[in-house]
Structures are given as structure tokens and as C-alpha cells.
Length: 128
Image 1: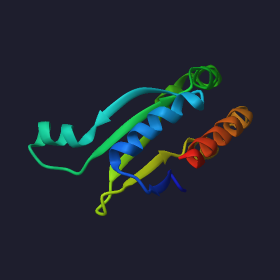
Image 2: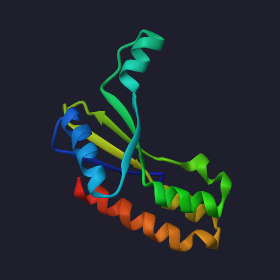
Image 3: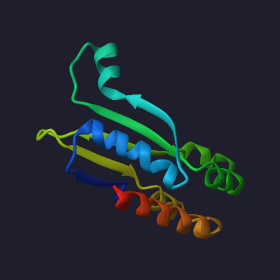
């Protein structure tokens, strides 16, 4: 199971984070949280770590539809995107592959919902 879709970008870490934030509204997505992993590790563990951030992306209508199909589905939301700096000083982006997880659940009620999510995820991923 491919739990993540990953791509190396030809830009810096900061440029990748800003690109994702700029593209999100164009794809009807909002950034609902941002976790600065590098800072958290430094603060909590006192250790240095490469630039790494996790962004939570959400489309409220799509999220609401999923929760209405299954109230526990909120445990899988929002879609997480990890951005990290590579050893070469470029950015690597990894998207949580929610459609694969939904397929693994095997609930036919989610088939149409999942097709919409998969198309949006692929469009966003390709826009990077």
C-alpha cells in the first residue's frame, strides 16, 4: 500500500511550503494547521533537525460529507502534507494518500466520495 505520494521539487524548502499554501485555495483547500517539526524537536528534545513541516489541508464540504457517511472518519482528517529539506537543499513533498486508505476500508458508501478526493489530490499533486 502506497500510504504517501511523494515528489522531489526543484525549489527550496521555504519555496515549497509557500507554493503549497498558495495553491491550496486554488484547489478549494485550506491549510488548517501547520506543525514545525524542526522547531518542535529543537524545543522538546534539544536536538537539531532538518527543516520539516506538516501542513493539514482540508476542504470543509468534502470533510463534512465523509463524516456524514461515517462519524468516525474524522480520525483520518485532515489530509497531511509533509515538506522536508533534502540533503541537496531542495524540497521533498509527501501527501497522505487518503484514497488508498479509504479503499482499504472497503465501504462502498465511500466509492463516489473517494473518486472526488482522488481526482482533487492528483490535480493538486500535479500542480506542484
